[in-house]
Amino acid sequence: MIRELIVQNWANLLVLLAFVVLLRTTVFLDNRTILRMYALILILFIFSMIVYAEFSLTEMGGFTEARLILMAIRYSATPLVVAFIIYTLAKDVPWYVFVPAIVLVILDIISIFNGIVFSLGDDGKLERGPLGYLPYIMVGFYSVMLVYLLLKRSSRRPAEIFPIGFLCFAFASGLVLPFILGQDYSKIFCVTITIALFVYYVFSILQLTEKDSLTGLLNRQSFYASVKNAPKEINALVSIDMNGLKEINDTEGHTAGDVALETLADCFIKAASSKDFVYRLGGDEFVILCRKSTEAEVKSLIECIRSKVSETRYHCAIGYSYRPNGPKNIDDMTRESDEMMYKDKMEYYSKPGNKRYRG
Image 1: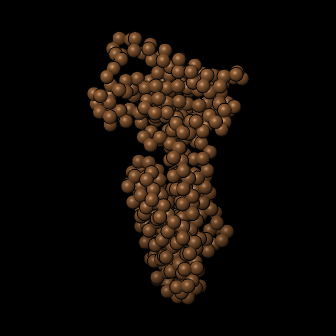
Image 2: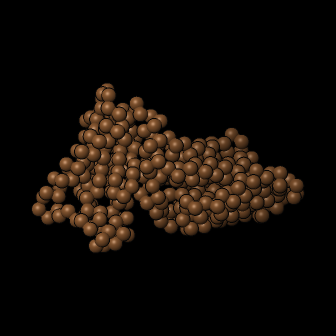
């Protein structure tokens, strides 16, 4: 039995072990996220043991009550695992994301006695009750929620879309393959989710090296890489500079200044389309590179940014440079965009009440 346990779960154990090692050496994640990842690894390990125990009892025959209990745990654990993944990976998700999964737990426990979700026939085979497909519906619901939340906070770059798509594929297989492979899919469910999470984690760490740690925007290194790797696709550049950051830092503290930068970054992300990549070059300096955009789209982007920033207590100066087919290089575009941005800044400070702060 020990030999079969190792053989069936070896791949899962190896990936989980690699996961633990990487978590212990990472410097990019906060302690809360790391602790949740550890808990998730432990849950997946325990889940794999439960699945093994259930199928071992099935092969032995009999043990009806024990099998029903293990089935209730397995059906309950699957949506709970996905809910915990959402709680771990998605930002600022409240605890009540677990409520639908907890409702299913209660129904699964009840099903042990009345078969409302599942039962075992006289031949020992699984029989679905009136709510027999509810666990799959619940997993589908959570999977869609997870993908939506991850896409919502992403910059929609291919490097970010791929791991999210990989997660989506893994969870989609969990909804389809049980009807193709039957109960045997449960034997590979844990390793499927483990590998999908591991791939997502590795890609997330790689992406963090390209992002600004405060705002989540792409950093200066990413800007230089984008300019170098795809200069012909970039036909517009938008320069943005926050007004009054030094005053906020000096009068309210640097924490307030960080909040200001995070707030503005959120405005830029919400305003940008899939063709627009937003960078924080440092301090209060931001740049947006637009790919294959019309000038009307660039102006619309700027107006959208102004609109969203106007809903906050902050203000920023904006300039842009556009080249439909012209000879301008990135340096020329940056210079032109910055000149327009500085004019916008001077106009802002020339108005009554907008005193330029110098320290």
